[in-house]
Image (cartoon, rainbow, N blue to C red; front, top):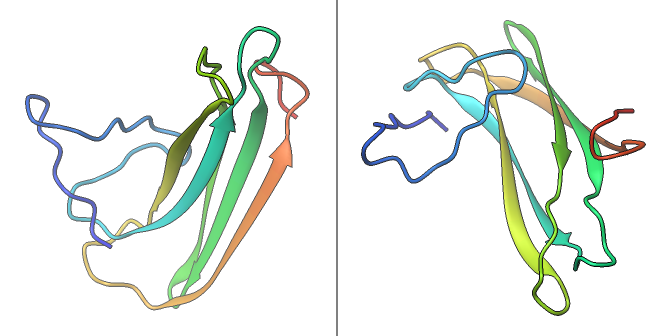
Length: 114
């Protein structure tokens, strides 16, 4: 999918840059979507994890990494949230994707990973 332009005044998406740095409007990207449950606090605490996405195209391999932590909520039973992670493929022309691998692992704390 091509990344849409995101004007500051009208943007409804909250892009937080991970690595490699930068999302460029018009470039193609690979997206991984997670549904997470935020724990109820107290007593629940933020849960941290990392995501690594490896995309192999006909022209090379792109690796993206993100270190993420859930928040907490006061809603009984927790709150479901959707997290979408994009890896910019660095091209405005549709690439030939040969494979996509995703690794998810736990961090030792919300501020320390791994």
